Amino acid sequence: MTEAERTELIEGYLAGKLTDSKVLAVEKLLIDDSDFQREFREQKLLWEALGPSKANDFRKIVGEVLEEESSREKKYRSFRLPSLAIAASFTIILLVLAWGVLKPDSNPGEELFSDYFSPPMNSTLFRSSNSEQPASELIQNQQLFDSLYYTKDYLKALTQLNALGNQFPDAQTSEYFFMQGILYLLNDQAEAAVKQLEKIEVGHPYDKSWYIGLSYLRMGELNAAKALFSTLSESENPYRKEATTILGIISE
Amino acid sequence: MDDKSLIKGLREHDKPTVKYIFHKFFPMIENLVRTNGKGDRQEAEDVFMNALEVMYLKSEEDDFKLSSSFSTLFYEICKRQWLKILAYKKKIVRVTFDVQSELIEDSLATKLEQAEQYQLYREKFEELSEGCRKVLKMSLEGSTMKDIAKTQGYASEQYARKRKFKCKEKLIQLIKKDLRYQELKDYD
Image 1 (spheres, rainbow over the protein chains, first blue to last red):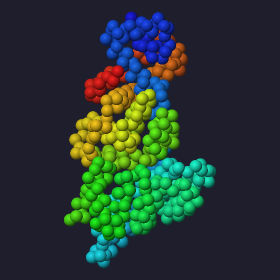
Image 2: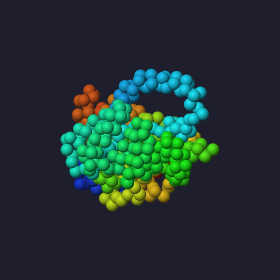
Image 3: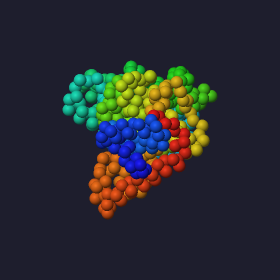
Image 4: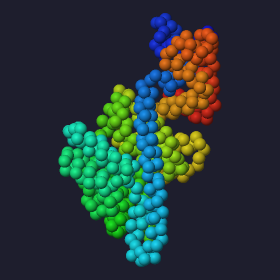
């Protein structure tokens, strides 16, 4: 048997296209012939990795999601960049001018808050809602909220979110309170943020402590912040490194 | 969405579930990749894709049960994937995370290796010429030599067969030259 014939035999076997006698011949070769075994493994891997398999169909779906999210991110960045650059320039000028005046009264927690607070890139609101109303009204409201959040219109997003919670009480899940807390922080209302974040009961175990800790920093309540960052610095979690760094700074 | 729904969603190739997982975990993965070895978004996407494939392969098992929460396990797999990429790139990085070996039991480790093998095959496949990729893809999708010869404009089925054989040989050569090939155990 030539190499090409062996390859075709294996391909036929993997595709389920062989006659019973040929299937038996392949299975016998798999027991007796180590070269054939090796070739079979290579061919099988090739088939699984590149051929029409369920795993490859699944990868296609993941690929589609990644592409959609990536292009949405790019679109958002290109939209935001000019305004961000202008805002950044003004901020720098204002900071330089205000430095001398504000320095004696500045809250160290506030600076740390600015350095470390970054809101989640996307809202996951209502995707985990327990609401039994997949009503188009709820979906429309959710989409409106999503677009306000993505375009960083945080004040309108918060108003929209609060209105949604009132209209659909079932939608007030832990995810809801999480996003509400984030939005209060983005709207410079740290106390209200703490109140909402405290309501989180499931999910976000580390996010909850992290963002409440940041809220306390913003409010200048360093001892309360310290307690939360201390807990975060003691276990394996995505905020461990940052929590340890903040802890070091506020303990100085 | 609870862990059971996530696994069900993966099994059923449910796009909203994949989106949910992306929104929930990708920022964390991107942060992991950026802060440990200065990886970029593309690398974070690769880690996400491969880790999710491992979870998918595992979820396909009849007796599959999560040994810990979905998020813990998924994040652990991501960490491992990223460490492997860093090792492959020969990047020496002081990472800020721990690896919890006890979470990765034998069958999951096998799936990790399986996914890494697939990844290697796919990467090397992309290095082939366009013609070779087309011939192999058509063949894997069940096209006959006659169809391949016709689509590719080859003079005969015999030539299509020969070309396919050469392309496959080339692919296997590329795979075997890669350092990862030696490290990956056969999962069969």
